[in-house]
Length: 74
Image (cartoon, rainbow, N blue to C red; front, side, top):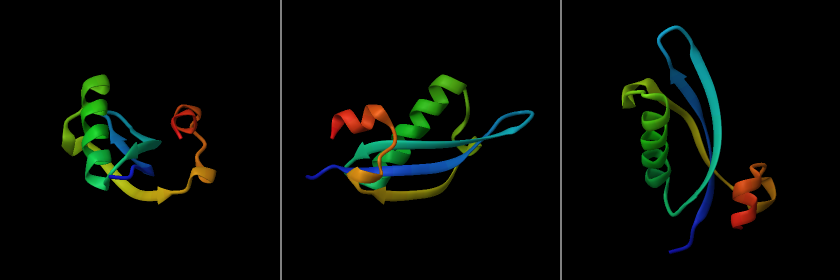
């Protein structure tokens, strides 16, 4: 399977405020990206899955990548 690059935009609903986020990840399908971010944010920020809202998940080209870690993986 060929891996794709996804850009994910969304919000983290904390107790006192909302924090926006944008992440770029490599994965084979959109569901893998969602599961990886749910796991990561739940572990690092102690958030429930209902507190993580995905607004936009889009596939991007290698030229559009801004994250240096993802760029090195290409």
